[in-house]
Image (cartoon, rainbow, N blue to C red):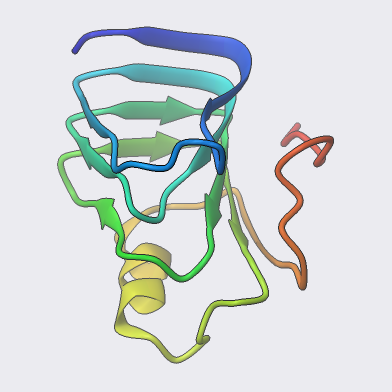
Amino acid sequence: MNWSFTDVGEAVGPNIHAPVILIGDQFERTRVRLDGNYFVGNDFRNCILFYGDGEVGLDSTNSVSDSVLIILGTVDRNSRELEQLLRGFHWLDVRYEETEPMKGSPRPQ
């Protein structure tokens, strides 16, 4: 709780095999995997957030600014979870990818 992740590469990535609950943390210029994890009252600034078809625990208690959402190829583009992500936050950009590009993916400007 109340951690700060700045320029750490991947704060929550695909190598984590159990759900993570993050409360009141700050993420800046960091990559974060959304599916299977839960976020409450966090602040995401200039981040890349990845969604790959798992349960989404990112709700309106979180703040997202100047961040990019990358939708991975496994996602059903008509799913309720994706619709909530797209409508629930003001994304700098939304990209659709066919693979899972966590490492070495482009950073938002």
